[in-house]
Amino acid sequence: MTSAEILTIGTEILLGEIVDTNAPYLARQLRTIGLDVYRKTTVGDNAQRIAAYIREAFTRCQVILSTGGLGPTVDDPTREAVALAFDVELEYHPALWEQIQERFRRYGRTPTENNRRQAFLPSGAIPLENPVGTAPAFIVDRDDRIMICLPGVPREMEHLMETKVTPYLRERLQLHETIKTRILHTIGVGESLIDSKIADLETSLNPTVGLAAHAGQVDIRIAAKATSEAEAERLIQQMEQEIRNRLGNWIYGADEETIETIALQPLKDKNWRLSLCESGTNGMLLQRLSPYGAPFVAAQFLPHPYPPEAFFALTEAFRQFSGAECGLGVLILPKTSAQEVYIHLITPETQQTFTKPYGGPPQNAPRWAIHHCLDILRNL
Image 1: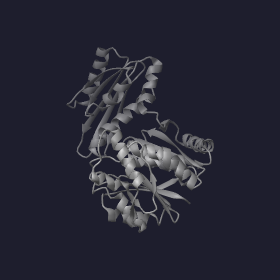
Image 2: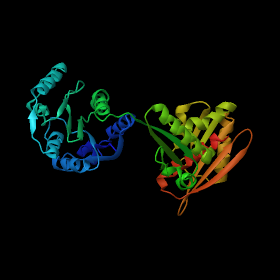
Image 3: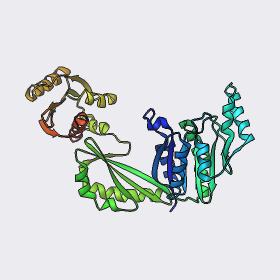
Image 4: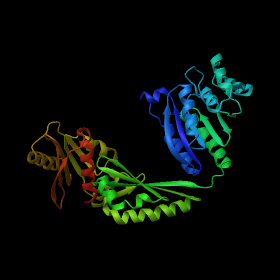
């Protein structure tokens, strides 16, 4: 089975100075042509280590896509590393040098001599002209091993991937499939409980099912591979329906749907306005809801913890002061070995208090508490 690996090159990524956004983009692009990605790796700016990775990766996969290391400086080692890995020399491409000079002229600049290094590629490489930057990309296709080297600048990498690399791979590997995904979002339930309900589905080969846990929320990924997008969608819908049958109201939405929009919808339907009181959350509930506007009307953040009963009274007093039909208060109190979360909800129909102990990392307590607040709102 043909598979690919993604290599991001750059010591700055390993040092945490920048966040790698290229690899997720490449993974999504490969998904559209049905090419499986089994590994993603980052290697610093060292030709020997990059070459070692390439040789090792080709024992597992047929295609490697790399980004970065194609600039003109000494610490841009990708060309040298690929030549080492394939045991070939670098060769000069006069036409590439002309293209590089033309790019500089277009930008009103003059290339320096070190830019000429970018016109040297591993022997036998296929040059890929870069019309949106000065770093040429290239492909080495040898002995059924395909190495594709793209610039690290996202704008340049994305243009080359969409206009040249994806068509090349589709034709070269005769790829006629696509991989489609759907993410189901759950809230208010733990990963282990969800797993106990759908463990057998997680062994499915196509579509595949996997879990990703967050504080107060678990996502369920469904991925299907098929010869058409319509067939992949059909496979996903079948699996999605089975998961929804088993998990019911634990699922609040899918893909781009957010818990904030789902949580506020019942208030909009009832034409109820909402006021907020927070203590111990660093104002996170306000931050999460304020971009969505009405029916959220007012909030107050109490920097010092109050006794629960006093906090509930403040929540009601502020609701009345703001003129809102509903009031929601969330209070986090630190305890010796855990934290106690109190959620107080007031509506024209009811008044409820929820007490939830939290024993995870203290810094995650606000996010965990806010997700429970939003879960309560969506079930109004």
